[in-house]
Amino acid sequence: MMRSNLSRKGPRRLVALLGLALALCLAAPAAASAITVYAAASLREAFPEMAPAQTYNFSGSNELALQIERGAPADVFASAAPEEAQELFQKGLCSRPVTFATNVVVMLVPNGNPGHLKSVYSLRQGGHTIAVGIPGVPIGGYTRELLARMRLSSILTNNTVTLEKNVTGITAKVALGAVEAGFAYVTDGRIVSDRVEIIRLPRWAQPPVRYQACIVHRAGADTAGAQKFMEVLTGKRGRTALKKGGFGLPPKA
Image (cartoon, rainbow, N blue to C red):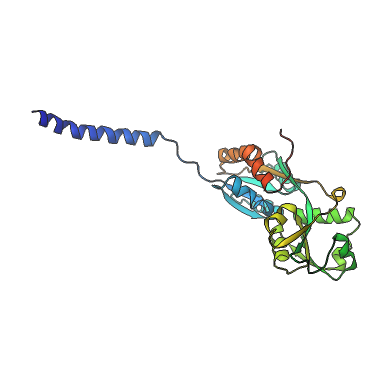
């Protein structure tokens, strides 16, 4: 009789265990899905290190903002200049932008400095090849503002200039030796530091480079996931990753 009772209890216990396992699975929260972050190309190293599980689209801030205006499936927008994020906010397409990082503009030259450029003033004589951001992209605007402050705007006409849509194109041209110099952020110079040399530009001539981020307002957006990303971005993990990448940090709110 003892064996008979045990044999009957075995299946019952199995059913009970299976039921408990099913209940636990149903009660467990679903794993958070990745959000889609549209971010300035200069953030291509820092953001994945800070939050590797997200989906990223890195490009020129102006191009990304235009895509968002046209309904692109972004959950967060991070721009290398306030103008793009502020414009989306004014149109009701994103939350109030938050400044999360700063940067500085530098001149990059290929290893070995084939153009023998000792400083940005060396470009005044003309005859060199340089890569510059297009006027509509933040790095293009910052570069032109810096050169105007230094009264060196003429170097954009005295030299052969290639216009790039984002900083990735600029650093690639310099790193490959396709141009003798390029204007980018110091953080981009650090990314390709094994192939370029960084020439610092005067602090007094630097325009205020401020990065701003906001949560995109659109149908189907993962607002909760975007909010968590923003908390990470402005928190210790985000600030640590940005500082490691060479970005400046605004005061804590």
